[in-house]
Length: 116
Image (cartoon, rainbow, N blue to C red; front, side, top):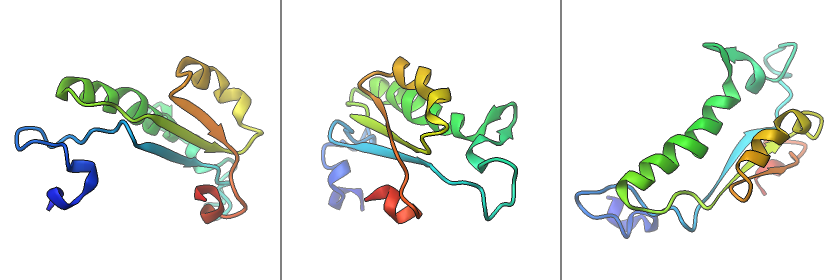
């Protein structure tokens, strides 16, 4: 039941969208693609004309905040893009566009190190 989940504690029966004002999201885009044996990390591979990563960025920075606004609840406080520093310059304009809502973090050696 969502009533036991603190994210949903302020949600009414008409609105199951939680208030995200105390919530941040991590987008783990620090992988190298080594298991896939691709020539680039999978988050940068194109899917339907856009890099896979762009779908996650759009969801957390555009679609979810728009939905929250419609529902009258706060959007996520912060999205952290965990990304290898060598790719960060390419994404800096996006971080700049969402100043205060999107920030970089460097990845750990393994996925677990990226979320700690």
